[in-house]
Image 1: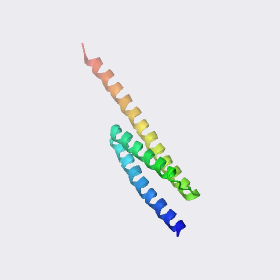
Image 2: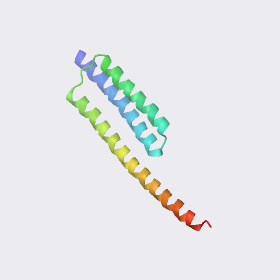
Image 3: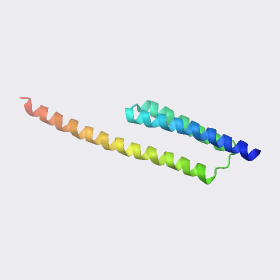
Image 4: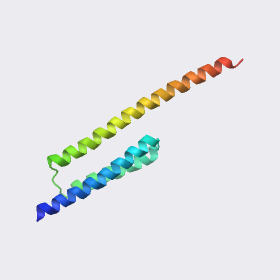
Length: 102
């Protein structure tokens, strides 16, 4: 019975963590970094609280958390590349506009 309860708690944690992870991804994609920071803090709090409750993470739970972290790292890398491209485009545009100034 206790094992079933532990599984239920892990499933609830995974659902909440997945929802927060999706919200974090949407915030990053939309460029709302203040919201992303708030969601990330909430996610961290959820993880710490879950572990403090004495839940013993199994291999599946660890793999789940690592997968979420990997997805977020990939998203941040893509976004950084997009910001770099935007910065380069803005720099070239400003340079061309200065060429028109007399």
